[in-house]
Length: 371
Ligand SMILES: C[S@@+](CC[C@H](N)C(=O)[O-])C[C@H]1O[C@@H](n2cnc3c(N)ncnc32)[C@H](O)[C@@H]1O
Image 1 (cartoon, rainbow, N blue to C red):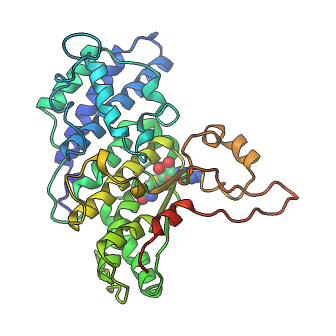
Image 2: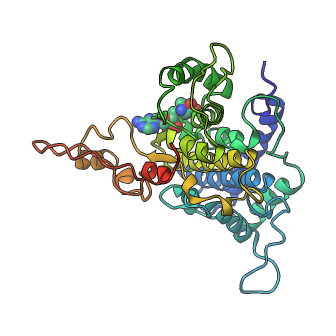
Image 3: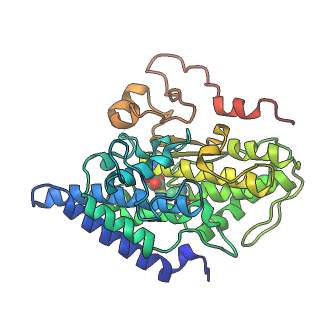
């Protein structure tokens, strides 16, 4: 049985209960009529604020950003007045620190995190949340003996489904436990590594990526493969051998270029982008070739993972107009495709298929990389 904190109900249940309590408190502080529909609206807004505060706490606990939430939001200077910023402003500023990297800029974007922009809780409710994170909440950084280290953000991936109910119900966001990911990868990726051991790049894809659980575990396996030329199964099976061992500096761009994800829900995808970016940088640090502390504002921009926001059942199968009528919000979403350009939609009826697009990320990543 796993003793990993993310599987330990004595750790997760009180945390989730406390976060729900703050969702209720923040929701009650948001103005609006006392109707059922408005209650749901306020709960959604409050959940967005509370959830992103958990992401901030995780980032602060791993020194990815400066600490403000874990000190109770009290040390943020006000911009235009003497004294300290209002708690709600201080929290928003702390959240803003998460968006510093090109891959993480979407976390507060109104098209990705709509509920966050739909209302503002009161300073008192936000200060109570800040006080709880400062004094009572557990650390989200933990040592593990097996399974994903806490720098993978596994806990913040799980908290998204635990705190924002409507996302879980609407899109079936019920993510795979890490040991089930490993079970699946042992039986799919490891045989594939053996079969394609002479390939310079192993390509993988999670077409319903969630917050990136499977992507993160895949990165772990591939890091081992590219840096050692072999990969041990995590649960059972035969070790893959015979790969070409490359220096970690060249292995990392290969890991990033090997892992693709598509996710239909923008905020869920934004969390996956954050997690995969941080984990790629963490791998560079563990290999000892990245210098200085691991901070979000110093992660190279090439470590941007390819995680698109799209309906993977329709993408490439229908033309752009049909796609836009099925998903108007996704069709106009900034940064939806990992290349930053447009998706490769199917040609309109009667017209020839377009030339396959160049995957810009892949080209950039391999520029100058030794074979
Ligand atoms: C069960 S979760 C799996 C997440 C992840 N693969 C894992 O193993 O933890 C399914 C995810 O698929 C997403 N999803 C559902 N339909 C989709 C579609 N048509 N295109 C892309 N993503 C979709 C949901 O939003 C949800 O995050």
